[in-house]
Length: 375
Image 1 (cartoon, rainbow, N blue to C red):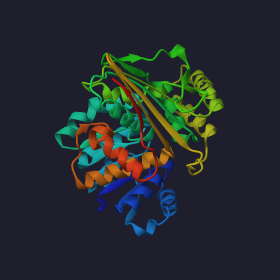
Image 2 (image 1 turned 120 degrees about the vertical axis):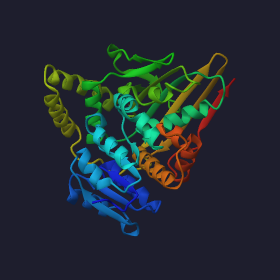
Image 3 (image 1 turned 120 degrees about the horizontal axis):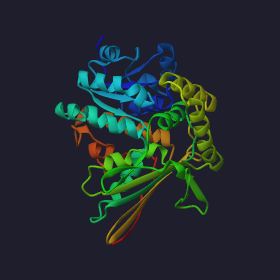
Image 4 (image 1 turned 90 degrees about the vertical axis):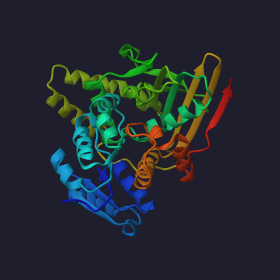
């Protein structure tokens, strides 16, 4: 049965999905909260403070294109949080396209975004719809910082780092292992994808604003090389990410190596079963609600060119809240005005990097950027 709600939150029972519902309530946007288990979705959404002040419906839906089309028809925006997206995302994108809805997701899978652009970008553009995967703190804030750097002409190289303090969710752990098992990670070199050398392992890096060195990984390659591959200003882009928790970061390569050893010679179905089991063992419960005194984020971008350098740092807190707010704002924008770009487009391309920064500042989730320029 079609919905009369213009916005769908798919995966509303998850950690990020619930937070998106919270911000949709603050924007006073009626929404459909959908997932595979009606009782679980209802319990999670009912726990949102003040949820009775905004119209919303709950829907249990089978994860198939036809079922999603039937449940979502009538909506104008689909906000998808169900990952890993290379495993579960195609049905949601295809359903969004069929009903004529804009699409965003919170993915961290470079291979998914490359695949989505090839398969669906043109079709979304033909219908004047935006397809924005990767609308998330780990990618969008770094992209905002990069675009602030690129306001200075003559820069063509981006060196991006993103750090955060927090707890991995089941979904994020599952995504890390899925990336390791089924995809390669790329950086951008002269507008071409180049594979990160697997043997390099974990990287020791300088973290702005602290004396300690940090540890970082290519983290699946991140979205940044994909977003900037077709940007005429940029020729090179590479990104590293890490949790500001040294023991946890040291453990990530070991967990990945052990998982890959278990998966050696197994079928895809068996690999997914192993991934699901390990993910649940690493983090089987929902992480605690973020605390802004503890859960901080930091995005740093060095942009350079033949005769210019700009460094932009954005400090923030509560990275899952940042992700949720960005998606709620995207819905609010799309219900009132067309996006700046249609088809496959990054958050900054679709909504404007200064606009997104302003929203995050307005809700107290990031500080003013620190920008140092030498040109």
